[in-house]
Amino acid sequence: MRKIILAMQMTLDGFSTGPNGEMDWLPAFDDEDAWKDLHEEMWNQIDNADAMLLGRVTYQIWETYWPAAATNPKSTANDRKFSHYAEETQKIVFSSTLDKVTWKNTRLINGNIVEEVRKLKQQPGKNMYLVGGATLAQTFTKLGLIDEYNITVHPVILGNGKPLLRDVNVRRNLKLINTKIYRSGAVGLNYRSVKM
Image (cartoon, rainbow, N blue to C red):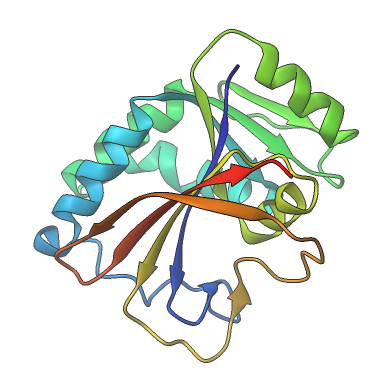
């Protein structure tokens, strides 16, 4: 059965973005040294996935940014590579407010998340990565739909922003299955959900 893996970045104090959605606390994207091993790990994970799960806000940002990144002369080599991957990979958008999605290889789910996710997990294929955003991560955590959590904690205390897992209001037991320290000082934490 396919797994849903939450793959997100956060600060040491638990924020996934700043108060206005900013992610300027991440290492600069053109800092190849800071991102080299982070990108290597990302591509290792992506090789085991064939679908990305997105919330509305992330979808709308990605739909604007990633298709154009392939030909933007300011894009890094990794951005161009990810742009092609994002274009060709299945994207599943969960939203109660969108009526349609138009980006290539994108499907919209706007009702009965639990039943739709069960169907997705039973389909043949590789794992599915929930890559954005925090609201979708919170919803999936509340509903017990996440099989693994791949969280990269960056050495930043932001003080304010959007928490990665806010108001979950349910207990979820996890088992640590891997850790990794990156040259930027970030720490990768990989947890498996433990069914209670």
